[in-house]
Amino acid sequence: MSETPDPCNPNSIQVGDIYEDCSFHPVLCTAVDEVAGIVLSGVSLIDGSFPRSCDALRCGPIRIRVEDVMTIKQDLEGYSRQLRGRGNT
Image: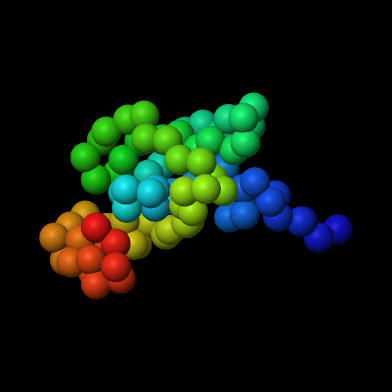
């Protein structure tokens, strides 16, 4: 049986996954609230801030790998420059 993606959570982010939120922080997902759409909540793996929440559909969070988090953590300034180069602030 093939799994069909949820249109409200196109990247199928679940508790325990790591995702990049709309503020470009790598976040460990600690909760998925499905009452009013799909709201992801978690803790930043950069500075420990929480709760960090994103709408799974409107914010466009993307799942990222642990290796990516380590690279970001080692050179946050470089990562920020890369984002600015993509047109993000």
